Length: 269
Image 1: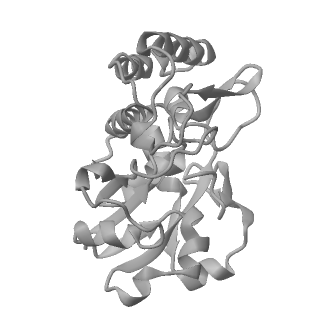
Image 2: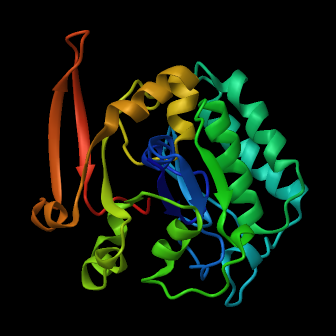
């Protein structure tokens, strides 16, 4: 069975984003949709000694698709700014020496478009985490302009999918107009509860960029965290009856108590 997921290419996404990639056979980076300024498409959080810090990619104004959004500073300046902020925040992290060069290599590729930068970063992080799912870019499928409600179905049909694993954030509009009702393609919703892990700078902060986990616990342990946070996917009726927020606890094999944070309104997966 071929399972597909579709997400916009956000900037340095959180842990649940990569957990979703890891759960499917084909992951589609939806770059040919409208750019939303000051969203996670162009920014994300890391953790510093002073608390969470928002890293933002400056972009030129205008109504554009994500793939067409131009970065408003030269690539060399963006690279210097991003790597300096990241290095200052994680200089004492156990895996800073191992991962920072990989990020720097992507920023040094002279990307001038936001979509290209985000896609490259996502692919590099997925590779570092040894995620084997196939990652493709929606604009490469050449499907043209698509209605928002039918877009997931058209992409899934083009990829001969048997199942579409949707992010929880798509539940509202899929509930109102569900094109999968008359399709043989099965619709399920991804369920992820954010696990805690050893983290620098005080009390644990959930929903940071996934690079926070990588710097603190490394590739192998971050991959385990991704799998640990994944719970049984839900169908559309189960989504309707699920609570909007809950905190659960899980006793790990080591007998340590691990808190999970769960939100059906997942922060922009």
